[in-house]
Image (cartoon, rainbow, N blue to C red; front, top):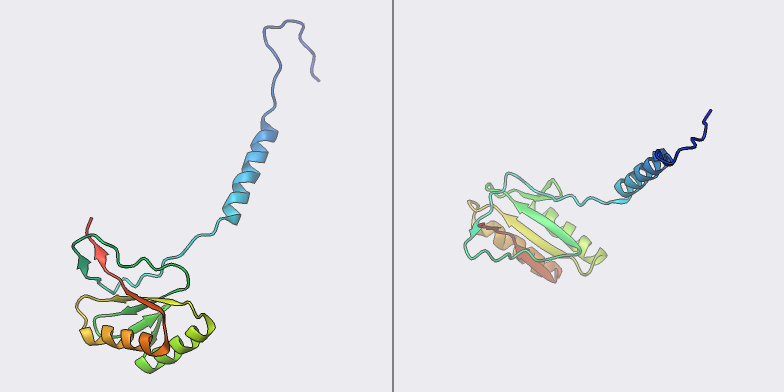
Length: 138
């Protein structure tokens, strides 16, 4: 039971528990509604370094990453594919998403032939934009 004090030196007590509850609800709301973008990175692909610090990977939107490992293995979204499978898959994806862009991440120790094969597949199936990823020095 509260008794009101007659002296004005204590002032009114403010109950902040409701404000704290509202703040926690807002924090939970923002955490739940925030989308986190996952970056697909194949750590077995060692990218070549570009010395002029100009990024060649400016593609946004419908972006598909093709990773080429040192031994010539093609990986798309974590799935290893042959050249024929990659060609069929890219053709189906191009029909489904006409504005699809491809980012090719090729290991610096792999043969140039593997990169040329993927570029040829992209051109054959009608991919409008294919970029090559490099690591920039900082």
